[in-house]
Image 1 (cartoon, rainbow, N blue to C red):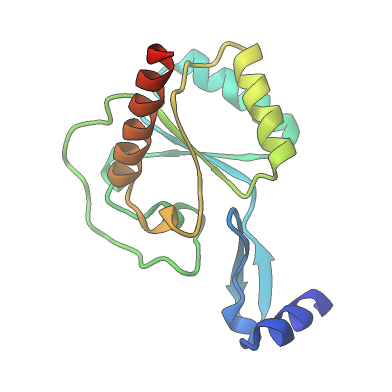
Image 2 (cartoon, rainbow, N blue to C red):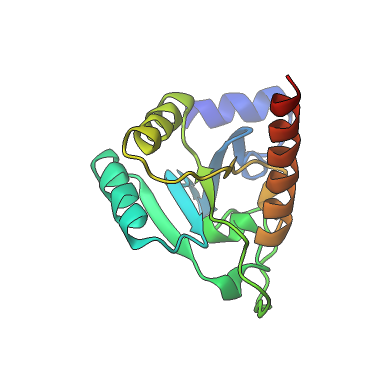
Length: 165
């Protein structure tokens, strides 16, 4: 608790206002208790059962939560899938097309753990999964479709720039 008291004093904000530790670390307030949101990997349009099983086997020993998000939830903000306190929840169901490709969003994973996962994905030949993101304070408010569109645009720009080199 000393960390939170010091942070509160430094920022001159009340304790309940300090929710984000860093750009990719999220805390959740439950009553008078503040807990870290669990390390999670969110999966969207991940249809290949063999690849899914390989990913489960990679994450299980690391004790990282894996959550497969249903298509009807694609209009919900990304932060709602991990109960982020800053996100406005939506009950609207999506009934449109499936994403054109799989997408993965990493939540609350420190750099070294993320590097281990990405290396494991390559080593175990899971994918390719070109649409990957880390949940941030900004994109936690985006719905799945907005996130995919942004990642897809970035992926296409990177692919084009590397083919020009």
